[in-house]
Length: 383
Length: 245
Image (cartoon, rainbow over the protein chains, first blue to last red):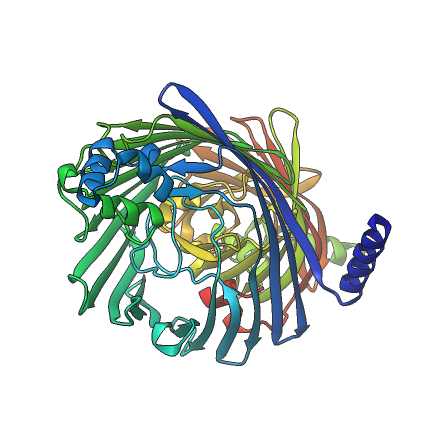
């Protein structure tokens, strides 16, 4: 059996080479140590990603990657480990269930996964590009968050980590060298449930500027409309960017999300970035965080718990191959923060390493304070 | 006959010596700024600790280097990363396929190292010397076995962030042989151009070595192939194109 598999794999590889298909990929091991009360638990992720890409002719490209994610160690995060005790007690009381039972109902499990991602075909015409299949829709100019991006979730603790694609038809119409109109349809079970979006991007007074509209649907099929805009450029020598999204619908309270950021590189190579984020849908007081707020936030169906956030990052090249960074995210409403020093370096042409320490600050019923100290040790080999 | 030849060469020599700084700079710009180009090359980064990393890339330029597109082809870690420079390097976009996102780098980012090398974005951006610097002819000197003009360049507000540059330009080929980069009047980096070949009428260094004299590392940029005067579509130098495979 093993021999047949080996022969099959060799034949597949030879066929791909013969078809001029570019084969590449990466292997990743990520270790997440995390303190829970007095003991340290660890979750280990082994991930293999195999990328295939090629061109059928000058005007047609295709790509796909296949991913295998295998988890080990602590694979289940219980409600009592990530939601404050007072919120759980209040919820258990309202539901008339023992608080201990909530851990059986609400938990997150890291399941092993095998999936195809970013599998798409792109056709280029003189002024049109059409991409069909699983793909990234990278909207927004923000670093820590992207209010206008309703297609992907961003993890503020690892904002540049690979994101999964979505199934979509995307048509770009290049009006001129600087102006592009993009239409997107994110396929769903039926037309009403699909996300549909249109965006125009151009250059205005040396600033990159865009306007967007997205129609989303709730489970009830009631629509939510999002009107968005983003901008990036330079002001008084500083890099500046901003992003805003206004959501409105019959079954939600209309709300605005806003992000503004700036960055600068000093003569000695020190890089500094800061962002302010406001979500009018967030709470202004930690006592107002409900169980639903926590559940939605942890599931990624709401953007934030609080209303106002500050984010800052400084980075300095420690050597030619090593950067030292210090990140901080601060919830201005509940006073909690998370600090994360980060060192990244390359061990060879194709080996990348990240070492991160997550240090939460704040009371146990606050957004960041609910967690204990954690970390990330990640090594990635590319081939 | 010998007298005529002597007089002829004497006139030639006087003619060369008599070039004004403006004429010298114009000739360097004419040689180094090409209408369009397409090439491949590598960057070998040698750190102060003795480690090396080698990057390979394809590079396209258009409109006298006003537009530049660099596409990294190896190693796999950075394959597909792209750098688009427009407006002589005043507009820089960095694209990485990992996120599918391009970032518009502000002017201050021009000082940053490109992929960890000893070249900064402003070192590899285009731009006319006469637009980016005020200049003064300091004299003549032989460098790397070639007779050179020694020229002091002081950046204008449009120019790079260095406090000054000293350029040694070949007296006959009008190409840069050596550039010393000063920050706060301290010598920070030195560029040596070598293996200079006549390609389509332009004297072109096939090897450029940038040494960081403060940090101790160096980066060797070697051109494997290059063509000038190629037809390149303007659409290649747009943000939309960055997202192409």
